[in-house]
Image (cartoon, rainbow, N blue to C red; front, side, top):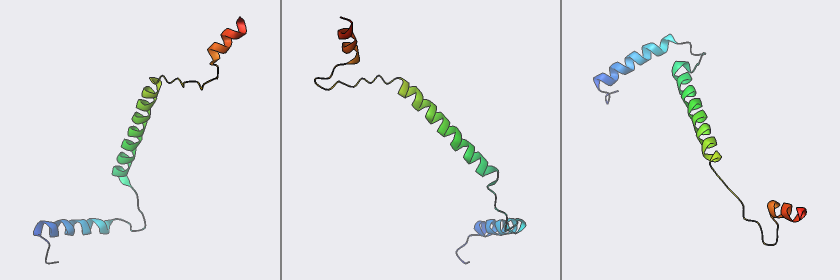
Length: 80
């Protein structure tokens, strides 16, 4: 590996010795995997909470089609 700097070579040497200590048949996400998963879960929860708050502020009334009565107008005509 002639293109490697001394620091890269040293880092690779440490990585290889650490990698030999692990069982090659056992793969686990570890603490970092748990932290990433937990942060993603909290982000989804916060986004859904924000979406609920924003959707609660929406005041949407569909304009009735021409010739169709609104429920309020139908109630007035039934009483009178």
